[in-house]
Amino acid sequence: MNKITTRKLAIAGVLIAVGVVCSPLNFPVGASKCFPVQHLINIIASVFLGPFYGVIMAFITSLLRLATGMGTLLAFPGSMCGALIGGLCYKFSKKLPLAYIGELFGTGIIGALAAYPIAVYVMGKEAALFAYVLPFIISSAGGTVIAIFLVTALKQTHALDKFFGDEQ
Image 1 (cartoon, helix red, strand yellow):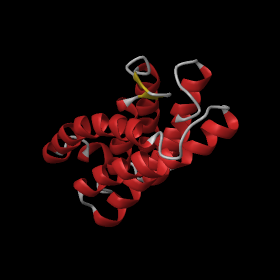
Image 2 (cartoon, rainbow, N blue to C red):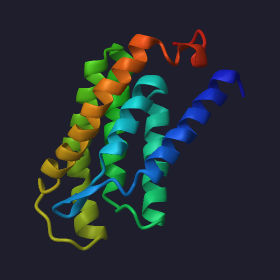
Image 3 (cartoon, one colour):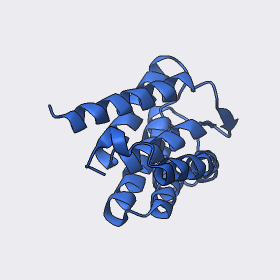
Image 4 (tube, rainbow, N blue to C red):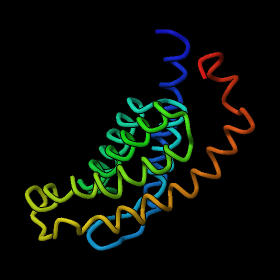
């Protein structure tokens, strides 16, 4: 395992831990729990680690939150879709605004629509197809606003450049 992979795994582990520890920082909107910290973490992973790490981190964080009773099954499609779309948008464009928009679209639209069958068929809840769009957009928007300030500051100050070496 090379140094970069080890460093990425270390950052991923820290971000997963932050996501789990910050789980109580959520608010209910309809049948979902809005968790803006997850979307902040998704964007950080998208920009600094890439879409693969972002999706894996979103899955592990959702799994740990569910196992500890601090999350729901609806966290899986929302967070994973947001991490994937945000990560791919940044990977191919290298533009921060596209990472933010990708997270919002991935979570708020694609993740919300993917949550519908989970809510109806797995959780046994009655829901309309677009029932989760507004709550997921609200949750994602909160994390995205925080990420705009944090990721922009990290990029402008080159705070992680030394950590990643020549890769970024």
